[in-house]
Image 1 (cartoon, rainbow over the protein chains, first blue to last red):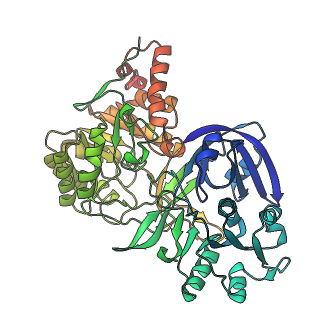
Image 2: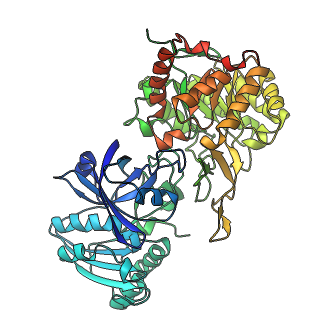
Image 3: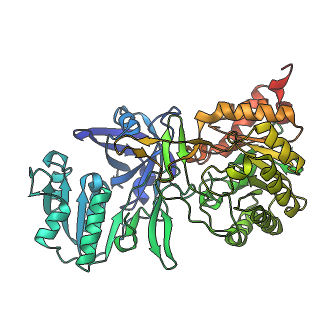
Length: 259
Length: 306
C-alpha cells in the first residue's frame, strides 16, 4: 500500500498539465478505475500532506502507472519539477472505484481534468467489449487532453469548449442537453463540482438516475481515518456525511446532496 | 543489548512509549491492514461522545505552512457503537486502548467514560480542548472550574483507570488549568491539542473551512508543544504524553527530553501511516547508538540545571 517508486516519464501535455508515469507494479496489478493514490510531493515538511491523484491508466504487463494532473498549488508545482529516476512515495490504490460491467452501452461525461480517472474507466470498459460514448468538455481545445488516445480506442466522442474552439460552444452539460442524453446502461462522470451539480440536475430531469460520479474534496489521510473529506449524501436515516476517500470517491449521483 | 522502551504511565504499563494522537488514527481499525497495531504503545481513539455526531460542514481540512487546519467537529458514531464494535476488536488484536471522551455536559463526559471503563479500555483521555465544537471541548478546558468538574466526573466514572487530561495552550492559563485538573484527580496530561487557526480563500474572499476556524496541527506547532510539556513537567509530578508535530524519531526524543513519559504521533500519521512503529524502531536504534539502556533516563533530561 505504501511504496517508494521511480518516476519513469513525465510529460507536459498542455499548459500547466502533466502526465507522470511511475514504475509501481503492485499498484498496476490491483488498481481499479476511479481509485486514487496519495503522493508525497516534497521530501521536506512543507508542503506537508500527501496529495490525492486519480489513477489515469495502468500497464499491468510493464508495471506502470500514470497520473494526469494540473498544477494548482505548491504541491503539484513541486511534482511537476520532479526529475526522472527520482523516488516518489505513493500510498494506494485507495478508495472505491467505478462499477465496470460487461456487454453494455455506457455514457462517460468528463469535464476538464475529470478525464483523468475516466480515461482508465473507458479503457477497461472497452476491453470488456462495451460500447462507450464520451462527452468531454474543457475551457478550450488545448485543454482537451488525451484526444488521440481516445480516438485510438474507437469511442464515440463529442466535445464541448467554453470558447467554441472544439466541438460545441458551451459546457459539456449544455451539449448533452442539446443533443439529448444517449441511451446508456450506466452513466459515469468526473469534473469540477459545478459541472457535476448541473449534470446531476439534468439526469434527474431526464429520469436517468443510474450514474456514478467521482468526487473530490480536500483530504488529509486518504485512509478513512481523519474524516476530513466529508461529503453529504442521503442515506436511509437521512442526510449523513460520508468520506470521499474511503466511502468514495465514486458515489451515485442521486445520493449526493449538492450544496 | 536492546534498549528498554517500557514506560509506566500513571500505572499503565506500555511496552513502548509511542502512541497515536486522538483524531488522527480513527479507531485504529482503519489502519489494521497497513500497520501492526500491536506494535504501537497504545492506540488513542478518536474522541467519542455519548450519541453520534455528524461533524462540521466541509471543507474540513486545509494545509498551512508546515501544518494543517482541521475542523472535523467531533464526528463520531457515539459511545455505544464504539464500545460494542471497536473496543472488542482492538483488544482481540492485542492493542492497548486509550479512549478519548468528549461531551457537551459534565455528565456526558462522565457517562462516556463509564461506558469505556466498563468495556475494558486501558486508560481514559479527557478531551478538554477541542476547538471545533460550540459546546464542550475548549469551552470546558479554558476555565479552572469547568475543567476540574469534567475531570472529576471522568475520574469517578473511570474506576481504577488512569485518566489523562488533554489540554491546549489557548483560552486559559496552562499551568492554572493543569493544576485544577490535577487536583480534580487527573493521573497525567496529554499535551497539546491543536491551536485555533484560520485560513483564507483569497479568490472567493472567505475562510477556507466550512466552520470558519479550525485547529492547527503539524510541525508548525512543535515548539509550542515542547514549551507546554516543559512547563507542565516542571510544575507537576504527573506523567505527560507529549504531542504536536512529531514527524521523526528526533522529534520524539525532544519531547522525552522536555519531560514527556510517552509521545503521540498525530498529523504525521496522515503523511506516513506507519510513523508510530517506525519511531519505535527509530528509538531503539537511537538509544543503542547513544548507549542509553533505558528510555526513562531521557525523560526530562533537558531540565538538568535549568
